[in-house]
Image (tube, rainbow, N blue to C red; front, top):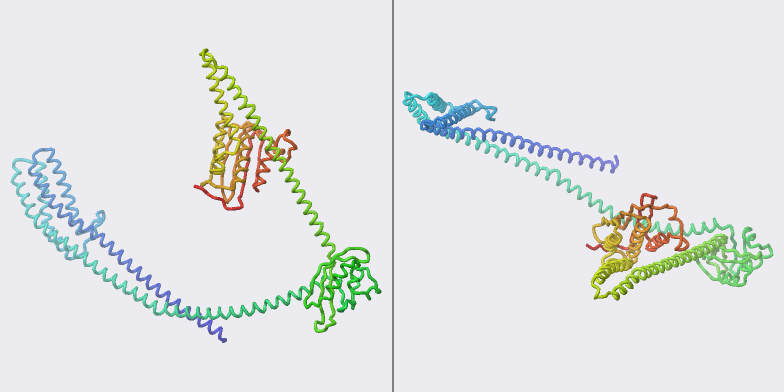
Length: 615
């Protein structure tokens, strides 16, 4: 048997031995706990029975005194109604007293009293029984006499009362002795239970001590030794890992150099070998075909064979003459005898480093197609960028045009609405004649109405400008204020629903564009959709702001969303501006509409930076 198998067998034996003793210890503790619980429960049940017996025994004394009290009260009572009540109470007392006395001796399931088996208590109960019976018989005779009361019964009544009074004292003293005996027995049982509890606790402590000595202590020593071995193994493993990593790095460098060389050789069928003076030793046929040279040309230096361009020849001469120890890579454009420009990926590899007349190996790959594709790609990228710039310029011009139209509309509203109302206000004020009271009152009433319309027009015009709430408090309060104001101005049911817990602030640019798009969507619902109910709801979840505008208007055909209007006269510029504003802040805009069923506009914006939350 090998050392590893022996060690494994010993570990298994140790583990089985520890597991056996550990299970035995656990079983012993469990047995002691269960046994103690059984003892306690049995004692508790016995205590419950003892408490009921003691309670009944104590109650017997009280009932004997109550019986005497009822008998004496019955003797003194003359009124029929009161006498009947006392008789009834006396009978009830007598019945309970009689039943309880029998239960103390023979047990009673309904009262929860077991049959008494203690000889001392039974002797005391038998001793007290004659007195109990004498009192019961006397009481029953008194009840009979009182039920059928005559003048001749007085002597017999006094005689029975004396019997009860005579036996009551003896009964009370005997019942005190019985109750004390019950209490003494209960205390004796409790002391025995305490002793058993102490024995069980000592047994459990001994088991725990044995576990510590024979299970946990050997196990802790074994674990400590195992951890020590593991730490030593870890240190050795780290040292070996470091050595292996160094060897692996050296291997990687060697493989990388070899792969570079193999890649060049495998992918280049164009190669040549020259001496240090550029005289050709060997050149591949494919290389000759590519360069268009013949056998006579091989007597020339390689730089003149490769290209007909003098500048390129001079550069290649400098490259070949430079005494290098490492491989050099070059991407060179050359011109062949066919007057064709081609690109070569050239690797210059020095050989025979110990010799001054070292040879040089030239490996080449034709990368003309790759360079041309790269140039085409750069051209397409440049053209795409220029097209995008032109598109942006066009969009910017359309936006500026839209802003100018908006300015003209505001100016027209102010001129046609507010301006004309101010002119009418001026003329009416100038035409007031104080001497004509009736006309004056009529004109003043008209002036009040005109002022109200003027204020409403001013509020409408100014409301279309940037509200102060947007800058001071953010997009949420600004949109809420907008819905309230538009609802007042238009008389439409415009509601605002905020599903966010806190006020979130974004950049000024984002808040302004979101506000304008929401304002445009609500204005479109009012002006064109003829909506009576508009709901603007806001939600912020997973770092994304969502603004929904729903209306119950007449809706429109979704196909017009893909069309870009050429001028304002064609309509639809509002939707175009909404899309451009949201694209400008890298947001997303969704518009869904069904003719006759209303429209939903959804704005989603996810900021690049973390937003600020205000309470």
